[in-house]
Length: 284
Image (cartoon, rainbow, N blue to C red):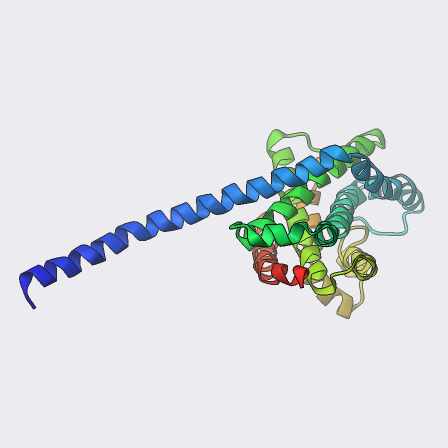
């Protein structure tokens, strides 16, 4: 091999090695930018119809006010050394996030499909993953209303909350992660069923098993063995566990915050990739 050819090969190899990180960095920044654009569109929708957020906050508030008050009096459910209202408050917050994410995440792209907007998104250079993440973050923004309302009601009911700034930040992180997880799951379901009627039925069918097959309102130890297995693979279980640790003044984590975070993040990544793959099916 001639020296000129060797130098040319070496220069090409060096250039490729130098441009790959730059290309990866550019791709990541582009993904973040496009995700924020989709998020902005979702927030604009929320500004035009804020009543939807308030209406969806009524159900978890009623659970805490009625169900929590009754069961805290009869003491029928063990609460791991906590007053039952304290034990239940993080579970009801998780329930509110679950309902908001499941019932609004997938429905948004079905409405966009009916209006012909999905075709415009698919014709744009926006990555499919950015569309899924942006819509998931839009549901997370909606879920912040649940956080404010449940904190306010819990405080009025005498729940001992932890107002440490780091703990509140941790609660925000897990609320957003949980909303992302269930919103992307909802988007996957919407990509498969494609119609509002089917999605409404499937969404309502899924929310109750996810809620009751978790540690939101009673300990996992009360469940039969087969339901305990389902509970341990249910992401809501780990969101409740993390919120119970950080939201309450005397709360603790059963599985550890690191495992809670890792499982929710893994679920978000997997569901986002699947949602990005299935997104074009909505337009078919």
